[in-house]
Amino acid sequence: MNEPLLNVQDIVKRAKEVMNFRTDAALAEYLGISRPTLSNWMGRNSIDYPLFLEKMKHIDYTWLLTGKGKPEGRTADENGREVEIIHHPKSREPMDDRYVSLYNIHAAANLRTILTNKNQYIEGRILIPNIPACDGALRITGDSMYPLLKSGDIVGFKEIGNVENIIFGEIYLVSFQLDGDDYLTVKYVKRSEKEGYITLVSYNQNHEPMELPIVNIQAMGIVKFSIRKHVML
Image (cartoon, rainbow, N blue to C red; front, side, top):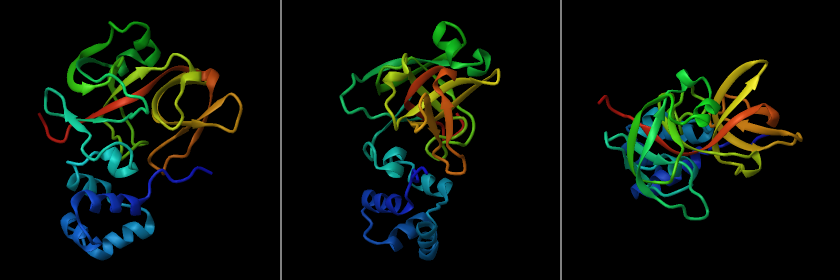
């Protein structure tokens, strides 16, 4: 059985820490909810993510929800959209201001097609300050990684050429085929107890983990950053 990917009590603790609130009551007042409502969130290990994250939108989501990274680990692209670094490697990566190609995944049909010819299916280019090298970016759909990622977010990725190079526990774009159909998903990739498989795990606990045969994988890319637009531009 997979352990929960989030703990509301820890999230509340980090929120109080970063906001310098000493009590749950002070945090509840800031969020605009009652103290019993906050207690219920912690007791049920369930939270009103849209409300909570909107109130804490100046804080890095990854740090707030998982404790990874830093509270202030955000920047913005040239259009003012919020950029969040998702992958925090143990060894330092070169960071630079760079353009990243935004691909139309619906036109390309799958990630392998994009990676085979990186000059096709480009919608545009995004200038993002202080990010690691990436092979491209695309828009995601679905709610399997909500609230860490939501439908419509843009994620930047770096190709993984060999499954032996997978860093288990990180978020990946995984392009695979089952029964003749192509699929593209964004999930945590974890080790599987079944030989020749990997386990795809959602952040949203309403989605069950999936055991995927490695031979079915067409392409993979580790997710380096996400872009979220909060207002219409």
